[in-house]
Image 1 (cartoon, rainbow, N blue to C red):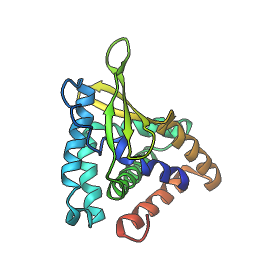
Image 2 (image 1 turned 135 degrees about the vertical axis):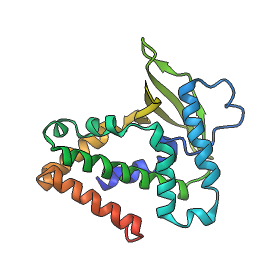
Image 3 (image 1 turned 90 degrees about the vertical axis):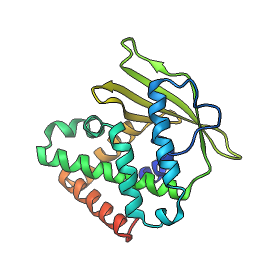
Length: 211
């Protein structure tokens, strides 16, 4: 699982629109794209402050507060756990959702601090028949490297457009974590043991003792 976390941490700034878009792209964006752009603007402006980013726990709280209204972990958590969600207790479901969210946010926060020279370019949206589910497609542009394809699966609910999955170079975050966590649960013997491991790792990272 550690390799998987590192892989997605590298693209953390991309996943929630942490990096600014290429100039000239802001005009004419559709509403789901505007959501990603708005997150980008808030985070990019604040996280350019080196004094602010020197406090990692502070950065993590800020990033969580910005992305929380636009991501639905009540949808993401069951998708990630798959069959294990059905048999989990209400307490384990809530604990997993919180620890998984913390893991993602801290990983993405770390990535933003370390990588700050990428830009994002939107491509045409893929919409479903009812228009309430879309795939927001983009390219991550990095100096000297080929563009990376990143797509955001989003749905329209009462609270507006929210992200519930991200696809990086054709690979789904939800699908990958589902496979990884399923293996971990089998090795550790229970979902509770996996959650305890996540909680320990999160606590160490936020206290400065881990990554």
